[in-house]
Amino acid sequence: MDRPAGLHRLLLAPEPAIAAPQEPMRRMPRCVHARSSLEASRQRVASGLSRASILVNAPASYNADPMAYLVTGAQGCIGSWVVKNLLEAGESVVVFDIDRQPKRLLQILSVEQITAIHFVAGDICHPDAIQQVFEAFPITHVIHLAALQVPACQANPQRGGLVNVVGTLNIFEAAGAHAGQVQKVVYASSAAVAGPPEEYGEAVFTEASSLHPSTHYGVFKQCNEGNARVYFAMRGISSIGLRPWAVYGVGRDFGITSDPTKAIKSAVLGRPYQLQFGGRADMQYADDVAKIFHRCAAARLTGAHVFNLRGTVLEVRDMVATIERELPRARGLLTHRDNQLPIVPDFDDRALRAAIGELPQRSFAEGVRETIAIFEQLHRENRLPIEELG
Ligand SMILES: NC(=O)c1ccc[n+]([C@@H]2O[C@H](COP(=O)([O-])OP(=O)(O)OC[C@H]3O[C@@H](n4cnc5c(N)ncnc54)[C@H](O)[C@@H]3O)[C@@H](O)[C@H]2O)c1
Image 1 (cartoon, protein in one colour):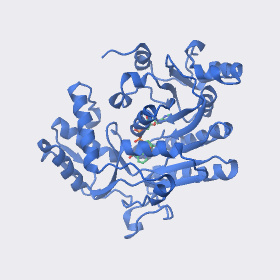
Image 2 (cartoon, helix red, strand yellow):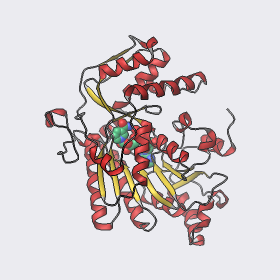
Image 3 (spheres, rainbow, N blue to C red):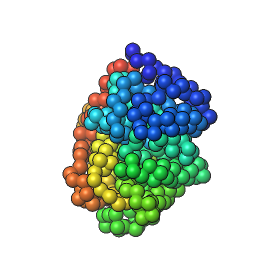
Image 4 (cartoon, rainbow, N blue to C red):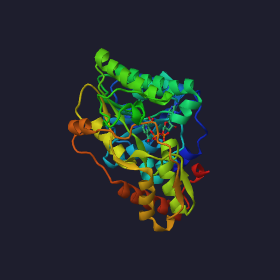
């Protein structure tokens, strides 16, 4: 595949270093120069960005838009779809991620689209790294997704707390320090703030339900929701925390609830796959979730809000049946275990609909169909990653 020089450089760049070599000023985007405190910004960017984070890719043409979306964790699954939606809406996008390989972005975006993104490589745990991004770019909206998932938090709770909690504090601190510029922080909370089904009986889980997270990850997300409330009360920073349940689609390749996507990929490849859980789950298509993040970021809503999401709630056996219906040649390849995940599956999303209007929601069959189509296309082009299938 022919790649423009900028993207080539991005892909071949060495792993991010916290003390990375200084980037030459000519690589800085024009937006930095368009800001009023031009000289101060220049100095901060030149001496700062290179200290704790590094600008990996400066698009050749930047239209000096006074607005920019910062998407943290945008090399991940949801982030890639958020970036896709933002670019398609004509927004200016700054990606901040510790990972500098756009492997998920490359599965759903064209090379031309990727070269329009500003990539900053850095660790969300370093407050300087985040502050510098806000000084270098005219960030007006933040979509904060960078996090470690359940297994990583389980394996190393201290690191999990640093990334998921301190990293989120760093985002709010930087937003607070640029209060006149930043309109809103939208961050990923999680359905993992809820407890197992037996905590709630037959009741549907609403935003007023009590929280009983059963993992460090869920406790960290609950903590972020509390900190967001405090930031609004004390410093007037408006935020929306969204609670996805299980996101599926191209790019979902890690974490317990990535199994349905791995099952779809295995089906495309004609391989057997066993999903490691059973019972009921709420499946939310990545592109729908991304659109909701975008809508929330753009919504004129002040305060510190937290909203549930809801996709298609179904039995894992019905997921398998749906995949088999969409791809009959996969019949008999997919199996599943029986254990219910320890999160009540029935989430009520009426508060979110009341706040931002009707939401995009593909049926599970539609989401599976679109995912199969993209996987098949990538497979035909010899670009379908399969490492996560083992
Ligand atoms: N996928 C789901 O089903 C689901 C459900 C509920 C909540 N969420 C939340 O949504 C967000 C995005 O989820 P996802 O599925 O896209 O996750 P993902 O694991 O695919 O992406 C997370 C991204 O964060 C980046 N990251 C990790 N540590 C970092 C650090 N120290 N500094 C900078 N970047 C770092 C990773 O490199 C990765 O690109 C996360 O906050 C997650 O907790 C996801």
